[in-house]
Length: 312
Ligand SMILES: [Zn+2]
Image (cartoon, rainbow, N blue to C red; front, side, top):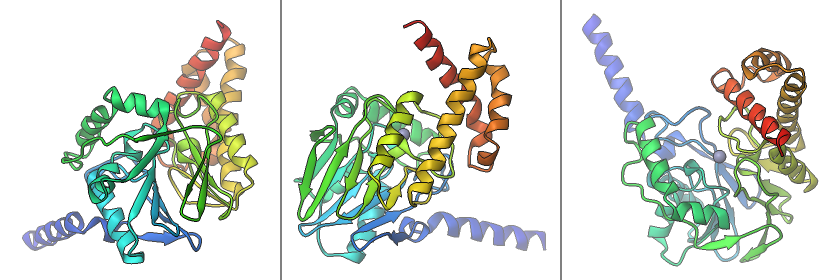
């Protein structure tokens, strides 16, 4: 009996692992032109093949445009399979919202399918990719996923974009927003007024507490900029897309975090003492994935930001 159960478990486990990525991660239609493949909430693992940030694509009159093609060549190929089931048009452009590898290492799959591919990213992202950040991310993701992204190589953006640019592809205009130092120093958001959609990258998240914001006040400014577009659909880096309410929810999280750390910093408390105050204030977010793992780190990062500002 025990052997039979063990056998069933083994069968179940191998079925889960061998399931093609496109079956595991379905595509959702958001508007007549905009589609999304939701990444699972959590840290990169063997089970999720390192797929960690949402992938979106837009149909234009000339071809398909992908925003953040995923964490590996394998995720990129999975996205291509989904796209080819929807349209026979090729992918002609890719946008990368920032340097974190889970958002752009999938470039390779699209570049291999179309060597004329235009890949857009902020100039600071291009500089950092040229300095080896891609290789760093490949090592890190392979370590976390037991080698699930093996075969991936960095293909950095080949077109620099910045705030105020409009990139017109076919019949769709992509307005580029960049508000300076925020989640990183190279975040871009993409606004399609015609579709009333904003792609936020990791400047907005829904249901997940990430551990790697670089600038908190800057992140709040970027979130304000996102809200000012008055879009109907906001696409976060992680979690479900939604209306203005998901951006407000994330803004409240960031503002509460910042203000609470600032209040107790001014009272002379150390960051480890402030952590419990922040947890109390952020009780509506306790069910968010990785809350308990990352909240101490976030408090520490905000504390250091406030401290460095005090010495300016
Ligand atoms: Zn990020």
